[in-house]
Picture 1 (spheres, rainbow, N blue to C red):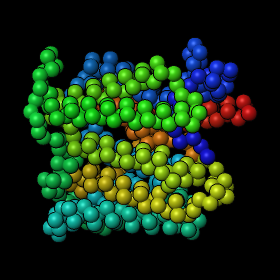
Picture 2 (tube, rainbow, N blue to C red):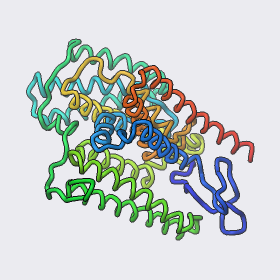
Picture 3 (cartoon, helix red, strand yellow):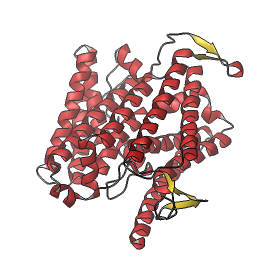
Picture 4 (cartoon, one colour):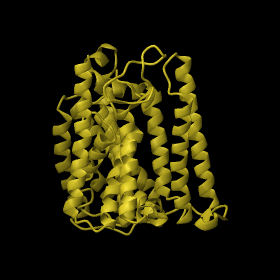
Length: 419
C-alpha cells in the first residue's frame, strides 16, 4: 500500500541512519528533499511571491485574502472529496451538476416552501448523499466505470436542476445561510492594537495561536511516534524550520483577516472539514483502505478490504460535500441558478492533481488538494488584479495542471528505472 504520510525531508545517505537516495529527491548537502511531497508547497510560495510583486502587494492585502478564501471556498470543499475519489483510483465528473441541483433544492425548500433553514439544509445534505449513493451503486456494485457513471450524472443532474428551478433563479436565502457563505465571526473580545498594522480582532488572533499550537503538537506527536517505531525522521533543525514556516503562514493569514472583517465563517467550516478528513485519511482503517484501493487493488482484495463498500461510501461522501458546496455557492450569490456549478468539476479535479494526487491513484493528501485549490485561486485572483484577459488565465491554469501531472509521471518513470 502506498505511504499515507511520507516524510518531506529525510537523511539521504547510506550508513548514517538514512535511506538511499530515491528518484524525485534533490540533495541539499547531507539531506535530501522529497520534491514529490513538498514541491507543491514550494511552488505555492513562489506563485504567491510572483503575484505579490506583479500586483505591488495588492494580492496580500487583508481584504483580498478574505476575498480569495470566500470566493473559492466551494472549490476547496469539492477538492476534499475529489482527492479521496482520485486516491481510490476513480474520478467524478458530476460534482458541478450536483452542486447546482442541491443548491436549487435548498432554494426551493427555503424560499418557495418556507421550510425552516436548518431542516432544509439537512434535507439537502441527505439528497446529496442519495445522489452519491445512486452513482456509487452503479460504480461499486454494478461495475460500470466511474468516468461513464459520473459523465451520465453530469447530464442527468443538470437536467434535474433545470426541472427543479424551472429555468430561473430562486432567492433570496435566509440571513443565516448567507452568513455561512459570506459572513464573518463577531468581535467577541474586541480589538487589539498592532502598531503600524492598526487594530485587529483579538478573538481571531487567539484562534490563530491555538491553531499554531495544535499544528506543532500534532507534528511533534507524529515525529515521536515514528521514532518509537524506528522510522527515519528529519533532523530537529529542519523540523523546527518547518514548524516556524507553518506557524508564520498561519499567523500572517489570521492577522490579515483579523485586520479586515475577522474570520470568514466559511473558513471555519473549511478548517473543520480539513482537520476531520485529514484524520480520517491518515488515522482510520477506512482511510487506509482508500489508499490501498488506489495503490494496489488486487493486494487490497487479497488483504480482505471490502472494495465495493469502500468505493460506494467514497461516492456517498462526494455527494454530501457537493451538497455543502452547493449551499455555500448559492448562499454566496444569494440565489440558486440553473447555470450554477458549470466547470466546477474541472476546478476540483485540477486542484487534486496540482496538489499531488497521482494519476493512477494511491497517492495524495487532503492538505495537498487544498494547496492545489489555493494555487488555482491565487492564479485567478492575481491575473485578474493585473488585468489579464480570461483566455490568458485559462492558458496559465492549463499549463500548471499539465506541469503537475507531467511531474508525477516523470517521478514514476524514474522510480521504475531505478528499480
